[in-house]
Length: 318
Length: 203
Image (cartoon, rainbow over the protein chains, first blue to last red):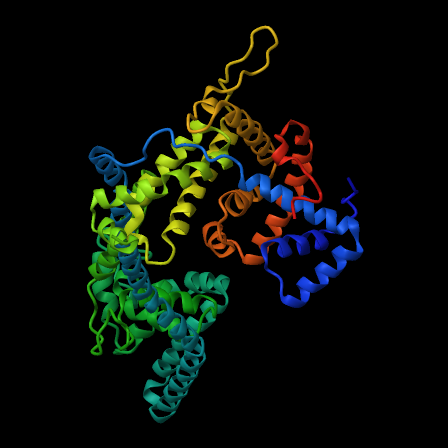
């Protein structure tokens, strides 16, 4: 027997195709010519023919029994084929999960929308303090002009101008604020600050408390209706001066704190007409809306996860 | 009745129609499974599993070669069985001679009463030689060799069954033949005369 191991893989492939009749006429002629000239090539082909001859003559085994299905086997087969229904069932869970996930995304988007509006407004408000300080200066100038025009009220106008400038000074230098408070209070308190009962006034000689001092302090000889609006914040109790805080913010103050204060105000006031929680008339929106929104977001997320878990569990039980 | 009409009845849930298809193809299915698995019991299981699977999926059959569709199911069942065997290897329960430790011939080889004892002996030798050489082939080569060379299937059907391009099938067949040829040469002296290689006769 000749050595057929020298044949390449391509030659074996060529002989195999020749054996199966998968070659074109040209290739067939080439193979025949090569077999005539190369005895090893021819013997390799003969061995391939012999191999296929053996394989084709390998005895066929009789089946050990018939493989026909009985009614019972068919019923069991249909029963085991039910995972398809289970798959559909888990598909329903998946769809439900997707639906609630969609609700979650929508609600979250709605929840985040005011935040984006707020961010834009915060940027707008960064320019507001400067403008407000200009307005404050103009107001001070007007006061000075009024003081010049009305010499009788010169002292009052000076006081007004001074007091209007003081908030800015205090915001810029907190230590000065405290100093001012200590120096100004003995003079301003009797005239401007209503003291709570029982606490006593400043240097109360009678010792009868603030009740006696406060009424008399408001009855100064000079009527100053605007003075109460420009009282420094430190001189007025928190509850009695809602506008003083606004003025403090408007007067410029700390540039870093102004947007924060504005954001705090935004939490409570619907100040933007496009705010979905406010209206164009600027009416306050019930705070319960945000609560319900948060409840909706959390609930939809939880339900979505629940359905997803159920779908996964059902699929695993296939 | 033609096969297409039987298939359509089977698709409508007619169990008798499906069983007609089973009777037609059970021998082919079992022999393919046996040549791939080299074990009658496993081939039995794989064949039955394949027919049950075919019954539940017959409504997915959308025309074409029913034989190729069924053989694909059988082949997949065989692959599943091979994977199971790899995960949980078993010890064969072939009867062995307690003195020498060598296996007796399986009674199943001799149970075929359609041939004479001499022919049975010859076929047994050939069958064992072929099966031994098939076992030494890689699974993918074995499957195509069984289908193309033992069962005589068309290349196109084999492509459909295995789900592999035609070029790959041809390549596998070529390599399988090359290995089988080298393997079978070792059994030449044991084979009956009519199956021995004679260089001038076989062409």
